[in-house]
Image (tube, rainbow, N blue to C red):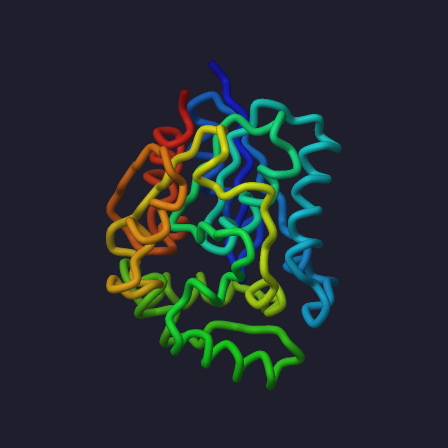
Amino acid sequence: MSDTYVLIHGAWHTGELLEPVAQSIRAHGHTVHCPTLAGNRPADDRSKSGLAEAVQSVVSFIESNNLKNVRLVGHSYGGMIISKVADLLPDRITRLVYWNAFVPLSGECLNDMVPPHYKGMFDQIAAANNNAIVLPFPVWREAFINDADAALAQSAYDKLNPHPYKTFTESLTLTSQMAEKMVGKSYLNFQQDAALPHSLPWHPRLSERLGLFRLIEGQGSHEVCFTNPKLLGEKIIEAGRD
């Protein structure tokens, strides 16, 4: 049976960068969409774009394409987005898949879930760049894409774009906590992901906020979308299937 997946990228990314993953999923007969969030499009004003605009861009995409029974997948920052979309479009979402993604409590912002040294780094970068942030390459290389060789790490880094910092500092209000929502939920955890320190892990620290959820794990870094998109696609199907 063909399922419908909508892949929501993380910070600094675009939907286009997830196309290799989408192709892996489509090879199994499924329909896959990879929209780019408001705030990460070329002409977007990074100094003003926030969570509301990013969320609405996904809501509008799903509604304008009349998508139903959606497996909505969020990577990293994308976890903030899919959590709120589940509030706004409960009748269109069949399952939420958090791929090494943030799982907010109502009233939290993304920065509430990162270690203090990240927040300090982001504050300094945003202050110098009109409230847009970019990852320093050493952080990208060692923490985000640690399973790539130097050439792939650099070529992937060159495809990233500045990210609106408001999306990290604005809090998200939910109608109910994620653990209380009746929608299907999965957490996809790649075990070599060091984007968050393992003392403050993605799983189980954040995954357990989902309440009842399916756990799927794989081998790879935070940016397995670049290093092994075929594996990622297969794992997303495991996480998203009925």
